[in-house]
Image 1 (cartoon, helix red, strand yellow):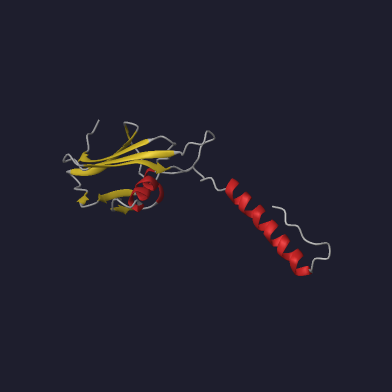
Image 2: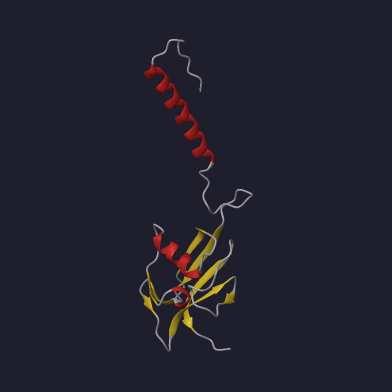
Length: 149
């Protein structure tokens, strides 16, 4: 942006010119650096998918939760909880020892059905707060009986 002023411009006119010029630079810099943190080099958003299967034929699906480096299964569940059509859940413990005890109105039953998760079709062997996700991972929470192998 070029603003022409007369050679004998007042100090006020020069200050206005500088402020307008700096504003234009700040807007241009903001437009360049406004990319979300979870965007791959190819420009595609990095996401994870999450499905909650209530065990009675009903499911809820989150097809594209924003992924970030260090994200855990618990973090993905928390992101689903913040979604406008999200879920509610309860937990016990924290960090790597986080145990999900309830999703929506279904509580763990101990010897009966419980909330179990898998990632990319593989049953998890660690708590929801310990499993680190990669972009593109698919998480499935199921309310079911635990099958001992």
